Image (cartoon, rainbow, N blue to C red; front, side):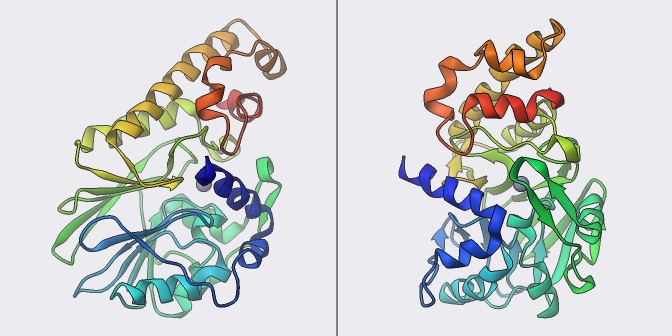
Length: 296
Ligand SMILES: [Zn+2]
């Protein structure tokens, strides 16, 4: 699938944020995809960005890599929005927070879960991608942080940011636009392929499943779901993903209970029947097991 190939390139470019900008011609514009009347998404280069425009100001969910800021702002303006008044980070990873310093310096008020601010402040290292992030300058740090959740009331909608523990990381939130019936899942949901789970920073497969269940409980058949990576999704796609995660958890936790090491678990090929559908995105099943096994 073409979208998956593009995603692989994008996620791998997390290794070298500058290569993202190299994949875009100087004058190449980003066209946001419309999700609902006033919500748009920017997909395909790093983490998916959500844009909510309206009279009270533009509200942004995640901000991709730093070199993308100008293009994101142009994209927002192309659909009638302004430089963002508010920005919320779904988690700390650099492909979702790379623009923070640029937006903070421009006057955007940044929100996140408590641990996101801490991780951005201290800098981080994600071994799976050999991705090292320097500490973020004060202007790029979230100004308002929360432990469980926070609500915004603007542009004739109520927006709830809801924290879920130990999912993709230890500081994930998903964002629910209640009236618009849109959810930005952050990286709790990779639409169509095995997800990265940052087990070295508090993520786990079990927690990811719980978080997905929480999102599913709030969604109906008309809900549009902006995944952290991959194309715009819906409840049916999130349910398929949930089912895959559940099967993987069941099989891997059994191997673990039997005392198998990660290497032995990979050798047992427990996800062979899932490979064709889920293994052609970022990770093969083998690689995915290696990465998440300690967090099962
Ligand atoms: Zn992430």
